[in-house]
Length: 179
Image 1 (tube, rainbow, N blue to C red):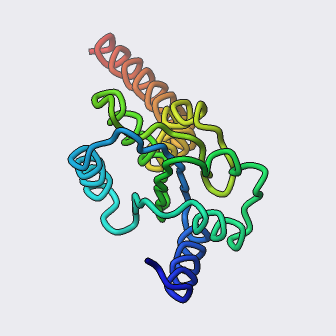
Image 2 (cartoon, rainbow, N blue to C red):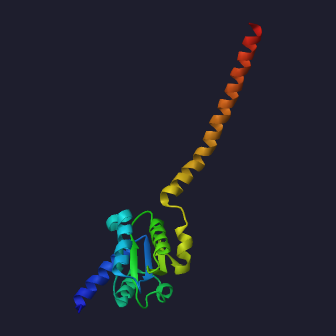
Image 3 (cartoon, rainbow, N blue to C red):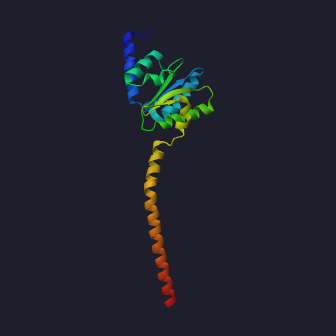
């Protein structure tokens, strides 16, 4: 049995984790087997190392920590009931974690059912998780932006190169005609 002091320590650590996390995901783990949870954690830790945690805590402690972290209770109240596991990710690319969990759920039928969560501090319902998982990763977004900036410059270079090439062909044709 947990002592009051230990519960307060857990709430404090959860509060700090929730404040730092770019993704907080609430999932129902009912029916999951230990080897399924372990395999899922391994996939997460392969990508995020110690920046991702998939933990099972008492709902009352999770509720207290969410309140202390400043999350709106009306948003998450219905999610913290029954068997609840919490996934927290402290990374610049939290969408990859959503991709991992949705891909893992496709292949394994006894994995967490996403109830709801917070992505970059904004609430989303569990039904929206698969749509959010389709978003490009941070690296892909950066590549898209850089490509967007580079496209006009590249087009200008090709256009100028084409003009110079045509000019050189014209000069060569005049040279060939005169000789």
